[in-house]
Amino acid sequence: MKKIQIINGPNLNLLGKREPTVYGNASFEGYLDELRARYPQCEIAYFQSNIEGEMIDKIHETGFEYDGIIMNAGAYTHTSIALHDAIKAVTTPVIEVHISNVHARESFRHVSMISAACKGVILGFGLDSYRLALEALMQQPTAND
Ligand code: DQA
Picture 1: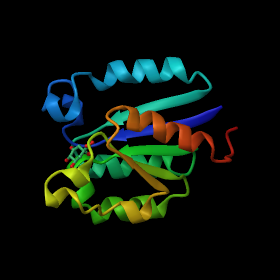
Picture 2: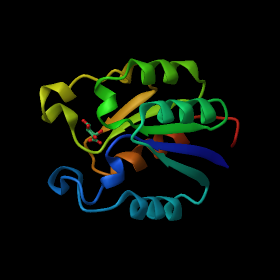
Picture 3: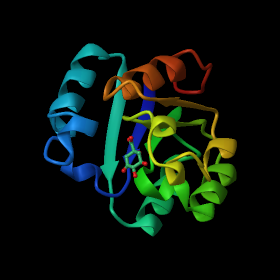
């Protein structure tokens, strides 16, 4: 069974309440229940933190063992060389996701510090971005099949 870690960064604990016109009305916990029900063949672990160092610790903890990491780094996407380095340091493929189409928003969101270190990037499909990333990871041959 594939083991997938989802890591959500700052302010994503407020999904459902935060800027619903941009991020929608659904909480991540509710969405996660649906995702787990739809993909019983995957073990999906979930971690959210507003603290950059805790996200780095989670990448280190899972990045040699899990089959994939799906990461929405929130605003740290645009600033964090430390997250870039953490992704580079591990062997597990990391997919960068965003709920919104960051390229259709403010120019400071057009730059990602982490994309170059990631296996791929999926953005702009709302919460479905996470499912699309999961589909992509399921195509990757890995140890926990
Ligand atoms: C986001 C986009 C980021 O620019 C923003 O800071 C977020 C959410 C997204 O999922 O669309 O917190 O990563």
